[in-house]
Length: 100
Image (tube, rainbow, N blue to C red; front, side):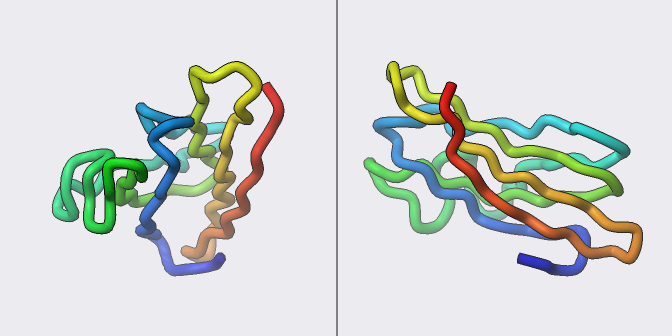
């Protein structure tokens, strides 16, 4: 995915595996991610259900930032969305599920 910065996107995760959603971790530069509250509070934005945790985020700055969700369930993977923010005002995003 490539879009103009600041980039906004919805993240949806199964509540049973990721009851608290995730958090942003800056890995280089000034890139950062923030909750956008005009779509609803974290976990309950448009389209969320009792089974689906959903939030709306904005990603800004330059460098890289990861959205990371860890599950309290043994054996459940760590869910990561990696954002590479470029100097031309765009971001690239890729997602992975990593073994803990």
